[in-house]
Length: 137
Image (cartoon, rainbow, N blue to C red):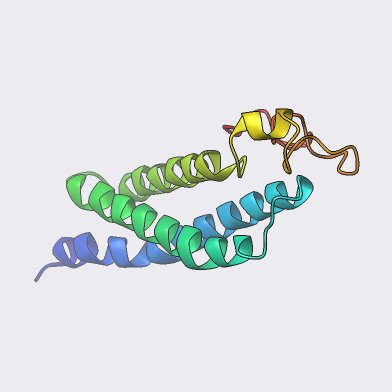
């Protein structure tokens, strides 16, 4: 087995820590957004820990692995860049799917998740006021 062949299979394994870091940062962003709007229900933390985090790790690692394996003819640095780009896109999409925690109409109506002046960081659509404009919502 030559070096290039070993490297082809080693890159997806080495990408797993990158996927874990990306997923943890995405998880933290969702938790902060939920906390700003008082959306962190008792089961919310469990959902983030046991559904969101492993799901994002798995999907982003599969994308990283496929991206690096499909581009096996390119230089290793370019393959890692392709895989890392896929991880970033998947983590951003996961954050966009989980924030806000409820449909935007629930924050505008008179229900339990309606805009609450006691939470000044929460906008009327469930997106925190500090939410970066470059992050999807």
